[in-house]
Length: 229
Image (cartoon, rainbow, N blue to C red; front, side, top):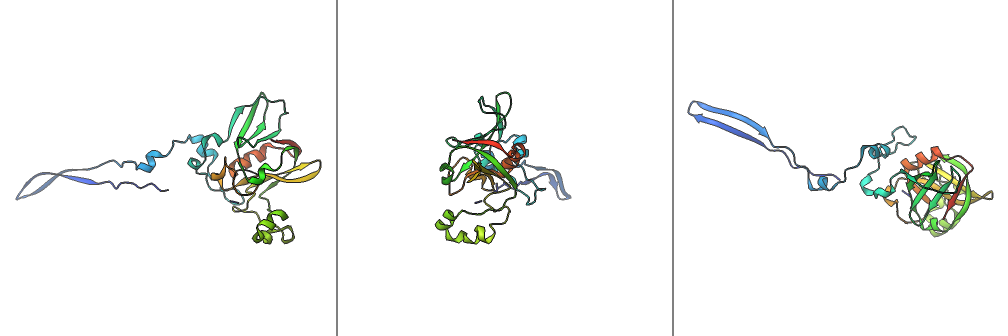
């Protein structure tokens, strides 16, 4: 899965003093301040804490570039929110109608993340468990997907799957969802395609920005309940 603003060049103005046949006296030299371009004026002002939150991660196995937050609606940026629920602390709740994932915390709070959904992401709902967690996972497209897209056969289970990396559809981390001990083939995972957060495009399950899945991965324990609705 998986701008550059122009600047007006500064001009130097030389102010001449009185001149005579004996010579020319230069009174001074000034520089006009650079004016921001139209593109720069239109860019939103992003809080430094979010810039840090979604900045580059150079120490990862595959260094992750920063997110261009102006391409992601602000409501989908990670934040702690009020979230009263009867579900126990540690539960992961995916709200497919509003493209949010909640990790339930104490005292009526939750950490909320924006998610993207593939069309296949609407095909499964219910209660299950996060049975397995993986950093920089391989991706193995299911047989049904290979039938639709035969070019993916090179990444089949028989061929060992797609190696991890920045272009791998599962991104930096993956949470594997099992129901009654059976793999649902449903995943919560990272994605380099941060501009798809808040949208339903292509195929796939529940995807977060790589910076967000790394944060969620650190909070979720194997065996945690997950609800998809």
